[in-house]
Image (cartoon, rainbow, N blue to C red; front, side, top):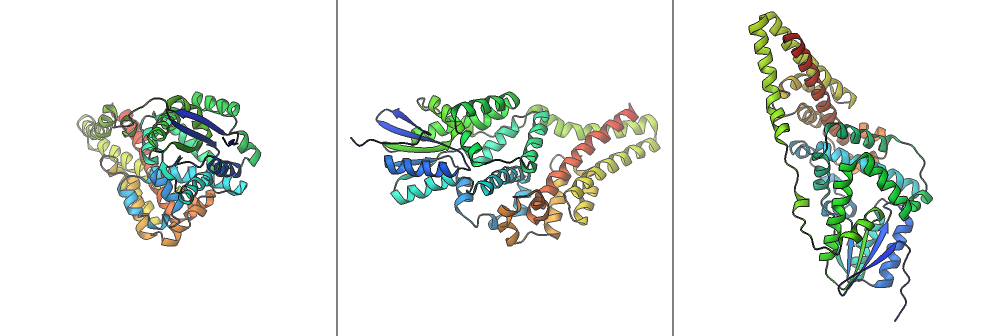
Length: 390
């Protein structure tokens, strides 16, 4: 029998009469691309599984995917924040890739290409990224959300030098265990949704993949979890559920505006019309000014700034609409991104300046920062009104 020489990053799993070759990779590593190439050449698999979902596969393989984006649809479907988070993470990987001279996800693309070249079956084994992000975000408390947002921003703003040697070191078991333990300590809820759940998902998809010989290309951080889970046949239905809003959040969503209206009316009965008008002005000015400031920070068009200022006091009382959606729609209308702007997104997100200068990402920033200003304005003005009235 011919001896199979595999890269060190490959672990072999026997599952019944099938052999699974698990290739642990780094997503910005030339060596990982070569590891994938060598493994496929050696084992000649019937099936190649890659750690991609359909949308990420489309983004990596279809160069014109950005030009087809409908920015108004993104705003209407309330996906601006999720898209901005994806772009920030993409920017981090892109900058690493440029420094190391390799396209982020190149080892996954190599797996996709080899599946076509060798007539192996291609399996997209990862959970949809939108579901993953919604589950991560939906189960977080407010403080953890703010902490995560901070770290996402640091990811794009940091200029720490990272070389190829450091990337390869991260594939080593001891280094990975240390990093994962540190991550779990600071963000246990995020690790559960982002890592542990996807370990289960990837393991089950690999289990379900056809063929006697399977090469599975996954991030090195998933290898240990997949090895633990792959011998158990598990349902993935629960892992695909987007968390519903809690009863408390729904109550706050509708109850808070009603409370403000009640306080203003109560102030009128208790202290007269002058006091009521002062409360109304406080509500309008604090909400409007802070939402407008958020839009200005996003370098929004004056029309978008004005719409944020005028809209925030009203949208804060209507749970079905947000100031950022109004300001973002106005920004997109007066400074509508062109096809070239969308095509340039991969380049624009490579720098902080690009996020603010590209018209498409500027719309997303207007939505997010106008909403943030409006939220702050709501709580600050409500606190002032409560203090003056009760």
